[in-house]
Image 1 (spheres, rainbow, N blue to C red):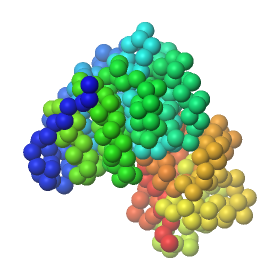
Image 2 (cartoon, rainbow, N blue to C red):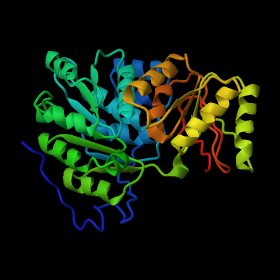
Image 3 (spheres, rainbow, N blue to C red):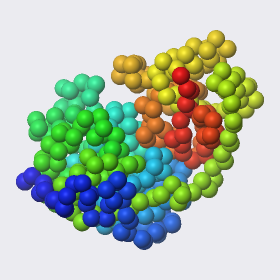
Length: 374
């Protein structure tokens, strides 16, 4: 049975509890500041602490509980605040391990983010025996079909196009899917996935729980919440509520554009850096900075959207394995891509434009970008 459509007044005014400009108003005030107090399974708790988490972030303190209780949830928070672990923990707590069927479906805007989400889910569920499969474009369709037919994974994480294709061809069954997550919903819709997302909704059962996470709430995201969510719990974590406990920030004022390269190189000669991600705002400047750092005998890797999928996969594997220590990239990875470094190992140094912070992170790669002006 297709999912029912829920309309809540004029689109221009936004759904109940939302301002026209797309800032949601929270209607859930319960805060749980310890994973131990969330009634999570022992094996899931082991995975959470083994992953390196010690205390839930602001969004996790507010959103995990209503998700576990089965409510439709809209969570609005900045990227890098722990939204991925929020829904990953909620999914892992709710799935029935003995039921060999897909019970949770997660959509992400990019292949890289889907793969990173899969890795987070697998790491957090390491002691549970839960299975999670990345259903993404750019991979062999026949091999994917064989994998889905052999044994349905408990959790599917994928991009809208490939997920809809598998649903439409009935290789992925919606019968037991009880939780549907849209991660980075604003980014997905801005990339033109609206029709595919709507088509996927129509394939799901009408009682499927919907969890939507987004940094912003533009009108197309609000339309999704109006049409496909039932009396959702709304959770807003404002910028001023975000805590930087355990994170040391350093700000460097680079007054002139031509001084940035020397400043960056001075840092790498002065500091002991385990691994680092440098975010650049254009693909051209990724190539430029990579060339300049190679010329100065720095070993760096570069990745951006002009590269083919296989090349990007190789670069990501090298970086995760530690064989590559410095990754220069565009915002291809900003929305969640840094989550591979979610453990408390090493530090990341991100150099922004004047006015932004240089951040060594102990728990999570931040989403401050390194911006080099043209």
